[in-house]
Length: 347
Ligand code: KG4
Ligand code: ZN
Image (cartoon, rainbow, N blue to C red; front, top):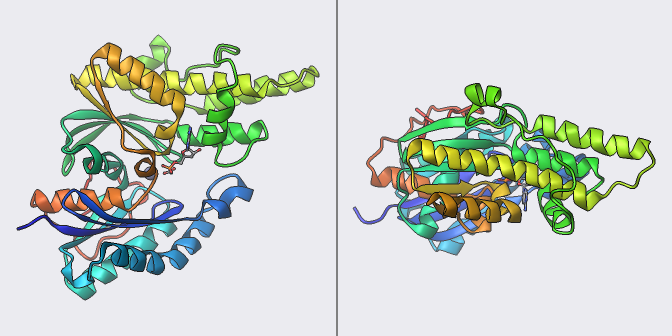
């Protein structure tokens, strides 16, 4: 068989993504985001996201097919995010994918969103070796052990409370900045002193490391920032917003990178993959580069546009599954908001 032509649909959060790949070549990648509709709420509202997916899914599908100049009958498979994510949002993409698969009589691959974040780098930097992967976004923060992207992945650790991006969004709200918080804090931090305030590094004490060596926790950090700001205000001091942002960011990036390098050592992996919206963070990138170099680890990171949620990550993971001869999902699958990363293809 020549390189498989696969259409991928992503709708797990606030982005409706549809992409088409031939093998590892990206032919179209269309994304409609509802982020603007969530701004006034300071976070993603599931009902609003579901409605936006419903409105966007058909036009986005049409645009992707047009851009790739592909007739649906030519497709070899339909891939779709089956979980994890928001139930109401996942259902929209999955229904569209099932309809296409049934109508066109093509195999359906209900895929894991987290694995898609790792797989997307295939499009940029080719085959993915055995590696550790750090996924950081508004919805997830996890460390993965990747043996085979189409079927042998396990979770080393994950956040036990807030995701890293969620912490950025909450701290941004606290200091009166906009949503999403990541980019604004990243910018403000460049004008601040990362050593001005020593904020706590979650789950790094010797006792915590025994049980949570590869886990993260950002809710204590968020509370520490809130208390610090509150105290400064009560004492009538001006809050040094840039220093608060830089010190908060340093605490997040310090823990994310330290545990990611520890995961590489533990797995004896010489490659670290980075993915998710927070991968765009300038400090995370520089600190990871520094620490990876010191540890003799190669850092792989897709371009920012592919780090955030999109259809390409699902389409290319689908194409890898077809290439590897993996069995497709039955048409009867249901979306699974808590799909564990070990289940690359939902059965
Ligand atoms: O992967 P993504 O687009 O969606 C989810 O699956 O959540 O990630 C969005 C998250 C938001 O929380 C946003 O604040 C964060 O990524 N983010 C950043 C940066 N750009 C986006 N966080 C830190 N620094 C950035 N430059
Ligand atoms: Zn994501």
